[in-house]
Amino acid sequence: MRRWTLIVAAGALLLGLAACSQPSSRKEEDEVLLRQWIKTIASDEFGGRKPMTQYEDVTVNYLAGQLEALGLEPAFDGSWFQPFEMIAVTAKPEGAKFYVRGKTGAELLYPDDMVVWTARATDKVELPKAEYVFCGFGINAPEYGWDDYAGIDVKGKIVIAMVNDPGYYDNSLFRGRNMTYYGRWLYKFEEARRQGAAGCLVLHNTEAASYDWSVCVNGHLEDNLALYDPETHNSGELAVKGWLREDGAQKLFAAAGMDMDAALSAAKRPGFKSFPLNVRGDIRMDVSYDIQQTRNVGAILRGTDKADEAVVMNAHWDHLGIGTPDETGDNIYNGAADNASGMAGALLAAKKFTELHERPRRSVLFIFPSSEESGLFGSEYYCAHPAIPMEKTSACLNFESIGPAELTSDVSILGGGASDLDKYYEDAAAAQGRYIFFDDDNSDGWFFRSDHYNFVKKGVPALVVENGNHPVDPSRPNKYPMKMWYHQPCDEYQDDWDLEGTLANIDLIFNVGVSVANAQDLLRL
Image 1 (tube, rainbow, N blue to C red):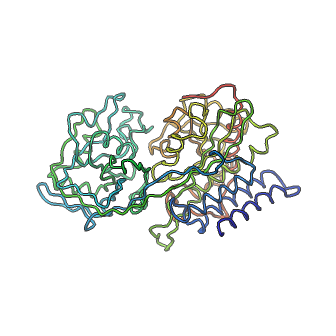
Image 2 (cartoon, one colour; image 1 turned 120 degrees about the vertical axis):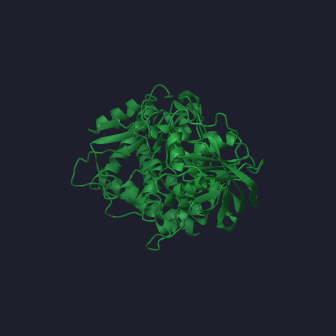
Image 3 (tube, rainbow, N blue to C red; image 1 turned 30 degrees about the horizontal axis):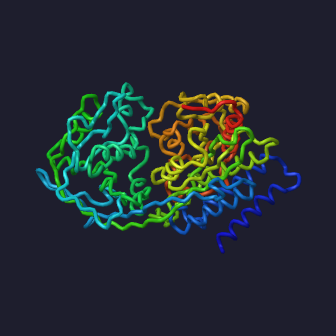
């Protein structure tokens, strides 16, 4: 009863604002709505929006209520929801440690030295006398002439792989500071699995990962999520996935009688050869898991003569839920900027689409995926089961952490140069009296870290929109830079947020959406 009361109240707010007589300005109305959506979705009542908790119901029903109030249609055969099965796994090493022995012994402490999990539906993980292998970056990239797995057998072993890719350290390698997908931690697991490894620990480095150790711990101590295969029970997944802190890696190398700094330095250069660490140890983890359904949320605005084609407006609804308290005792990870701001932006864009004098030629899909934070799983599922086929999807316009942002004369774009979508953004920015800066420094791998990349893997053009670097009013710098609040309880809505740039960027994405939806031809990569 409570959740439906929330929807009705929110819907009444939306419709009431829309019906206000003589609003002072359209921009003010947009800002009131945007603030209300962010404040509501990021409130404690939503409990940090972790999938497969009671707060999923609150979140997805709220979104469905808003989409219905806007006059959109359900996207999934008459339903607002696209359910799919996920497994939530908590795995803890016996004794809170892994013990290894080489020339000497060492204890990897959990979670100070490592944080580990599994995606398997099992009560225990047991790997007796597991052998550890250092595989550099853990990359097999023929197009770059790089294979960290050449000449080494990792079957049944634990791979240690550095985060990021060689270009982070040498601009002449790969794409330099513009990280490739090979640098992502998810790729390290994927490749280790393809190579037959039993597990993979990604060697953390704050600069190369772009976040500190606390982010690894906060995201993986409990309820690690994965798509669930009911036929195999995920038995083909790695038995052990995890992050290894540099201090923990130093213990491994010391137990092996090896120089870690020399090994890491060598791994950054062409011609590196992976090698066994000559340390072994039993791995035993107690596992608890729960298999439940979670839901993507979706709505559609039907197009006219090209209604069987689509433009996707995407914003993930999930965040980290309730977890480790910060120094103030706050344990709710509200996710106001990440990604209540994105959802609010997508809802505002949806409202603008419904107010067009003529519907666009292509259909416009508003997709709110689940489980982005744990591995882009909701968008992965959607892209495998789309409401309109991927080959008929012209672009994915992703609303990801778009606020708060002061107004800037420029707009930064990641992922440019792959399609004609660039031109649409350039034209839309020019119409605002702004310009696009195509940023080729993707050193933090941001282009691969949100839902749009699953669309890219299916051949659908997508770009990452970020606020620019040149404030129109230098006296109003952004008070809430991303690194202050990323994945922390302090990511909460503030009444003093500057949303002028946020609103301009929403208009920018909306105008691109309108243009792509009305274009003669589909865009493709």
